[in-house]
Amino acid sequence: MKSIKGKRIVIIGSGFGGLGAACLLARAGASVTILEKNEQTGGRASVFEADGFRFDMGPSWYLMPDVFSQFFQLLGEREEDYFELERLSPSYRIFFKDTERFVDIYSDRDKDRATIESLEVGAAEKLDRYLERAKQQYEIAVRDFMYKNYRSIFDFFTWRVVTQGTKLSVFTKMQTYVARYFKSEEMQKILQYPLVFLGSSPYNTPALYNIMSHIDFRMGVFYPKRGFHAVIEALQTIAEKDGTTIRLNSEVDEIVTENGIAKAVRLATGEEIEADVVISNADMYHTEMHLLKEKKDRSFSQRYWDKRVMAPSALVLYLGVKGEIPSLRHHTLLFSKDWQKNFGEIFEHPAWPEDPSLYVCNPSKTDDVAPSGHENLFVLVPIAAGLAYDDAPLKSYTEKILTTMENHMDIPDLRKRIVYKRTFCVDDFAARYNSYKGSALGLAHTLSQTAAFRPDTKSKKVKNLYYVGAGTNPGIGMPVCLISAQLVYKRLTGDRSAGALEEL
Ligand SMILES: Cc1cc2nc3c(=O)[nH]c(=O)nc-3n(C[C@H](O)[C@H](O)[C@H](O)COP(=O)(O)OP(=O)(O)OC[C@H]3O[C@@H](n4cnc5c(N)ncnc54)[C@H](O)[C@@H]3O)c2cc1C
Image (cartoon, rainbow, N blue to C red; front, side, top):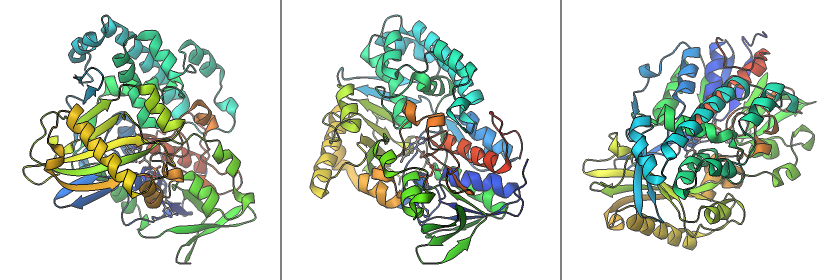
């Protein structure tokens, strides 16, 4: 293994990927500096407080607890020394707009059985078979895909992956795959909705990603007390303990290169910081097309980006509400009637969704994040990346969403009870995170943007430039970005293994 002791490593961005990489590299003896453009660490997992409410700005589902635990153990740390995890029960509630009914999912085989049967006769037994396969696929993914750096597509299409993958239909489209098992639209929607976590649609995503159902139905849904920034603060504390310097309000304007080698980064203020290695945790398009000033240093052309499928952006509402909202759980989803039309408006022909699906997080059900006698809501409506708009349509669409919640989530007087409201939409994602087309999540997980086909963790053109976070492998999601940090560590230390790191 190559030593990285004493190397000057500059990381652009302090999201899960950037902080995760800092923890690993600083622990291994590198001299790490993180440069973050915003006023706080965390990237998409930022937090803000207003009028006594505390709002997580982005992630709200703590999934894949095994991946978080592996990461902390690798560092010789324990999550419980930093934050308290609570398993949610139920995991979530779903309202179906077309039938006006709701179900609670507990991620517990016995508790969920009757619910599943009520949606489709015989579905409970089919779900057992479906999830058994999803479990096998999850195990293959962890062993063969997720913790692996790809040097060519042959690293992806290994004999084992091709034979086992074909047997398990992982290359079939998700919609087709789920329809083979379940006839009712409600069951199909329940098994397809987790794709939204990956910024994808069942019509363009391989069934490989039904591993999400194993994660959702069998592993359970957790919540870190004090919110998701508590996890970011844990990573920050660990990184700083090993000497990482974090500079906030420090926007990088250029990765300075000489003959295909990154020599330094230049801040917007003009200050230059020298580096032996540069790792960008910033948006991949932003890094390639804005921070690398010369075409010859870019791994991808504008033409490449024009053909990419971006994950949706979102309209997010942060609401402070007076009084209790009994119809909501910690996580509540509302599924639209015409799923195909809704995904069409998000991916094919961008428009404000006419009949939107939406998601509401109500963390005050579990945590002390609102003033007494109030509740704290985070409402997320997936919207096409790059959607152009101005104030008036944004305002009227926000009203439409609040009316939809009143009518279909059993909160008849919601608007009258709102005491705090902040709106965050496509342009805000672009401005706050330098996100391409204002996507909330980055590159979608289509087959041609997965594994060996996704931008690599290492630049093809600049020798000592690396990428970490949702834009590279394995992809979107907090735990997945922590895996990405391990991939960069492996690249820098010359570790070619396929599985999770066992020691630093
Ligand atoms: C609304 C929303 C809900 C989500 N829900 C979930 C969920 O429930 N569960 C889950 O697991 N995941 C969820 N995700 C996805 C998850 O949050 C992201 O995949 C993950 O946090 C991305 O981390 P990252 O390492 O890619 O960095 P990011 O979080 O994207 O951070 C990158 C950092 O780089 C900084 N930066 C950009 N340009 C520059 C520059 N030029 N100079 C300096 N700094 C720069 C940015 O300010 C930012 O802080 C959600 C995301 C969003 C937006």
